[in-house]
Image 1 (cartoon, rainbow, N blue to C red):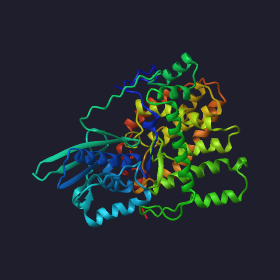
Image 2 (image 1 turned 120 degrees about the horizontal axis):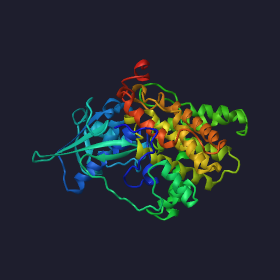
Image 3 (image 1 turned 60 degrees about the vertical axis):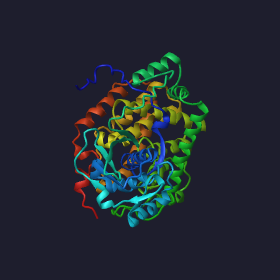
Length: 463
């Protein structure tokens, strides 16, 4: 039954989420279509290896959104890499083309990084237009053993690179965090009761998993990886893969901006911010190393706004950058708990919209906003992304995805300052806007949710 937006949100049961669940360092172009399938394929291969099984054949069937836009998102190559024992975190992006080419040319697969088994992609990697019941991003792996018996497992890529195996009960590592919250209302109440800021609440909760210094170090690595993606994106040249013949633009834009003078020129600030986001998402589209934040399709928003904070905000410091990421994490937790960050379920409002909301909150916190101003910034960030569809041309994470990240970053900065000009009081709460996003996503037709069956994907003739 649909929940009313005028009633207080109920608590959403479930284990606490860690920042290490939300931010992961991997490769492009898609967290749900590349990172998730690679992890699922790797998990299936490890299952076989750990049980001492060497099949004579392994097959993967892709369903729903994974099938409809899988080739454009690199799902086929991701499955091959995962079965061959590669992980999104560990694989060298520069080695991917050669690894995939070897499997295809030799028609053999080093299962789990071990012994080769026959693998004919035309027969063993099958795309189905039908959907599995558990999620729009479904896949099934089957191993055929020498005696003719079969082992089959179904997995779902549920957004942000996370996977779930069908029939498996989630590992309820329900850590007893000191300040649990399942809604923005509960988060604000925790702040009122303790006097802590949102970033401090999250940092204290993370200490239930590991020493606080370890979490700080992890977020420092996340920041470094985000800025590394900006730097690499600003150096890349040529066409992006996939056949649309999209030219990389970040390098040329950066050179023009440098020619125009110092970054302190106020008229150039948003152009630099757009460049930061553009660079990350061009790197993502090229299959490079990016941070899932909270997805790959929206990987440029948070890095661009964080870079804005460090480059343009007077008094910015390292502590403020950590505050930014801790706070953004809190907002991301709420979307994961109360709705979804999967474009196949929510459309792009669940990716760029969520990233915009997270970045707005992070920036407001880093600049010194109160908890209620931060919550207001997050609400504004999503409110003006409601209904955003996911209709990538050719199933590629390029058009409109790359430019959409630049818009999300600019909106996030605007949302943060609008909130900071107020006192935290506002009409629509963050909980209400998250519930609205969830309902909007459920009402949105599937052709607008990462299937490339509607919108720009069918109204623009591919080159």
